[in-house]
Amino acid sequence: MSRRLPLLIAFALSVCGSAHAKNPAGSVSDAEFPLYDRPVADVQRRGIAAATAAAALTREPDAVETLRLLLEQDRIDDAISVAERILARHPEQAAAAVKAIAAQNYRFRDAARGYPEASQRLADRARLILPSLPREDAARLARQIMFIEWRRKPTVPGANPAEDAEHEFTTEYAGTEEALLTEIDVIAYRTKLSWEQIGKLDTFARTHPRSVVGAKALFTEGWQLSSNIASNGIEPRGSDPTERFLRVVAIVKELESGVYPR
Image (tube, rainbow, N blue to C red; front, top):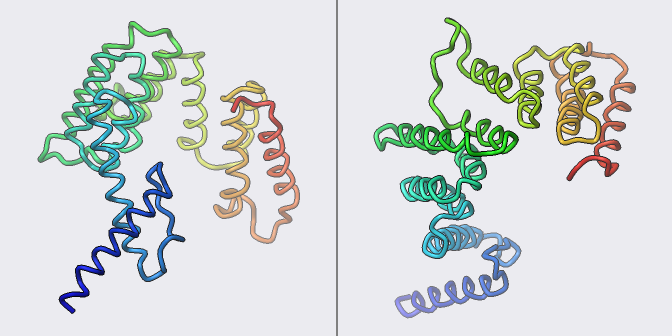
């Protein structure tokens, strides 16, 4: 047994090496491993991801992709440093950087390590960039900042801080694409699901044809019709779903017709 162990280790390493060679981008396919060796694939995946993040930090220490890789590896301190460099040196990439943090903001909950304060510092630093950006770019950045800053006290006592922030944003950046996208979220998630809500989404889509905004409104309408209208009891049990089904099919066809931006 003592002689077999080094051979088994060598075999495992050779398998990992050959799999990595077949997947130069760092991907690992479960098909390359027997079912009972899937844990080896998981270990290799984690190792490749960790090595990729470390190499990116050395090669591109102020790149948004490096920030994303570090966040995925839960290297929050390094990610904070990268984000600070991006905000200081590359303001044109601020929106992408803040969006990367917003997508994984749950990783900034460790108060003992000071991560919530760090998130707020990044939000404050990003806000300083807003006046220097064109209005549409500023709106894109401001919308992402909302997702990483601490919830402030609402301007009206008893109001929801998140809804208050959304209202301030849509008012300040009224007419921009980001404000319109946020208005769709307000309709979809801040109002009660109903046929009236569906009608508002449809009107929004028709008011903004062949645009990203129209596509989002139409997609949201289709999602509510296909998934939630029946399950939430808006459509009574036993009702004929044919009309609703055909409406969803029509929405899918329209979204896939090529008239909307990619």
